[in-house]
Amino acid sequence: MREALRQREAEEQAKREREREARRQAQAEQELFTRAVGKVQALDHAPRVTLKSPPAPPRAFQQQRDDVEVLKASLSDEFDIATLLDVDDQLSFRRPGIGTDITRKLRRGDWSIQGQVDLHGYRSEEARDTLAQFVRDAVRMGWRCVRVVHGKGLGSPGKQPVLKAKVQRWLVQKNEVQAFVQAPPVQGGAGALLVLLKGG
Image 1 (cartoon, one colour):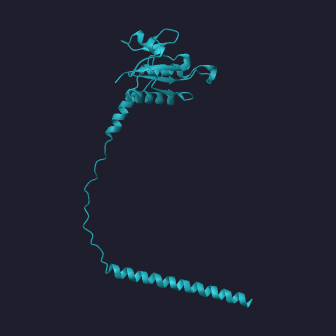
Image 2 (tube, rainbow, N blue to C red):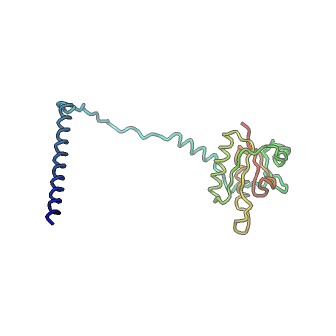
Image 3 (cartoon, helix red, strand yellow):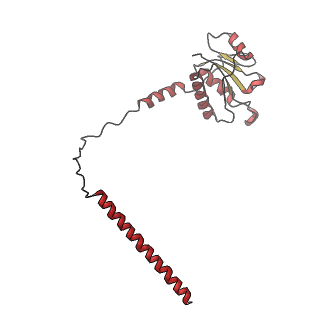
């Protein structure tokens, strides 16, 4: 018991000694810093200028331009394309001035597909925005022929394709689109379109 008490006292003594040493060292460092830095004097503050009126808020010109572009690029679900589609078994589309040879070549695969967008499982609004952005990006990159996969509607209520007619409607409204045809079976068949875009 006495041995345990002696050991505890020795530990407490050692602890107090360590604390004293740490305080001495901190004080020595403080004195060293004070000697190294020397006398300190506060800086005078220059008089402050008060603005008479706050500046006018900035105008977001780029945002306004972007909004105008979005309105131009907005696609309507109500657009009637029935009169614009070539009435064949695959309902192709070509702009005025584009010959039937172009849709024939497109159908045959004379143009290599440079990119594609898959709209499977997208809601209508999300699919429309994605398609519009894809067409803009494709034109900017100089792509001429792209594939748009809209699906066959096998997972839709009533097994009817929801996006197929809408995608055709949206593409007709994009000035960048010259023509489109239903993809051949090996490239998606009734679930996809091959789209020819304006050249740069």
